[in-house]
Amino acid sequence: MNDFEMQSAPPAVGAPPLEPHGQRRLWAYVYTFIFAALILFVSLAGADRQVPLARRGRGVFYAVTIASELVLLLLAWLGIRFSGTRLREIIGGKWRVVEDFLLDLALGCGFAIFLLIVVASLGYALGLNRHPDQGKQVILAVAPKTGEELALFLFLSMTAGVVEEIVFRGFLQTQFGKLFRNVWIGMFVSAILFGLSHAYEGKPRMFIIFILGAMFGTVTILRKSLRVGMIAHALFDGIVGALAMFAIKSGALK
Image (cartoon, rainbow, N blue to C red; front, side, top):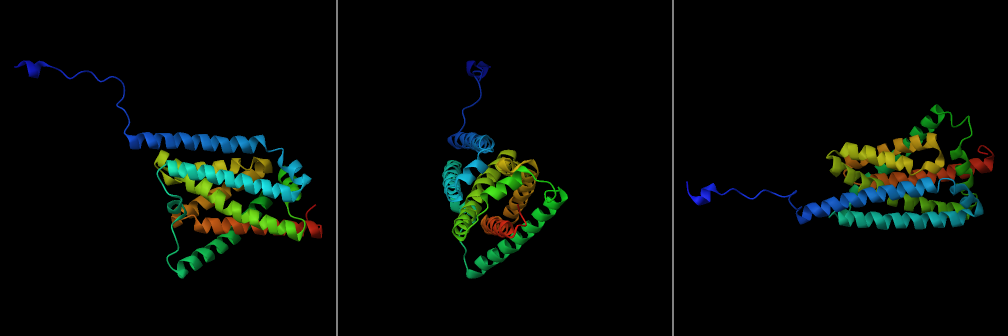
């Protein structure tokens, strides 16, 4: 046996360094956790401030909420870029033909109606129509009271429909799905975060919103696109706001 064969390889010290792609993916996950923690902190810390702020002026409240949504969109966009993906890919690309647009529009409208039925059923099952709760006080304070406020609220609904689908389904659901290597676990985690982010509405409504988050996430997985969820989300929020306005005016909600 020669000297070369008798020599042994030097012992490895520590773990091998990550490749640039692996480092980028690691930091993308770190950013995802920080972003999720930030959403929860802001939501829980501001849970008791929603009603007082809305009572000072609903127009101002809507404007502040829209600005907050845009900040979330920017942070989510940075996370999406950081993960090596483009926002267009997350949304689902462009509509290739008019028929694709009409199909998504029809599915979004139908899904919004289904969401209204689910929410009404869950609310009835949880007794929200019989017992006043924290969420009802939020609705009374936040719901539009005039035509001008309704117009601004509808704009807020469209903004929230687009932004929250990008944030929760497009970014968080995708990232947690990659982390756990299972899109359904990613959907479940994202739905939990979606529910907790609405802590200001009280525990029963947080549970309902968790269910909504799971439904939005499921549609995103099945359609491989955010478009149907965006349309349904915006329509759902807008219809709920309009119904709340008319219910308050008629005395049915007080």
